[in-house]
Length: 207
Image (tube, helix red, strand yellow):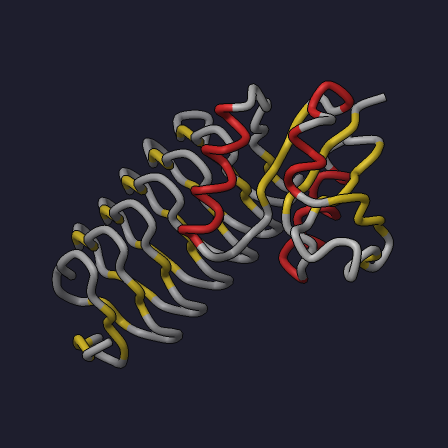
């Protein structure tokens, strides 16, 4: 029996669990630091916190961190890797992934998403429902591309950046690290590190 541990019992966690079952994982078990107050998540059970998982890694063939916050996801992934966990990559059966694309360990690509030729994604990324990462895009580690967002060909996105729901970026744009692109934004010029851009066309705002 293939058993998968998921860290993060949230709505996003439910979507990742459903994806995992469709990918052939027989048993999906949640761990969340809100346990024991949070002991159930829809069709799944929350059995302990992160520390409990660290003591039970040998019971699972793989681990996924299903936390939307990029920094928290990174910290959990690094903790688990240091403890010897096997971070698995999940690709929903309805997603379209080019055989020439590269997905880093712990990356999750959800239903209806597209990752096209020669796109390269780092570790721990999320390509959410219906998102599109076009040819030759380069995503750093722990990037989140939200539902229905679209990155045109050759876009670069730095580590820990978050592309909001429905946002778009024109070809060859460079988006820095730890950037937040707001929902529905249209990115038509390069974005520096640690910036928040919103609107059409997207412009910077103060944090």
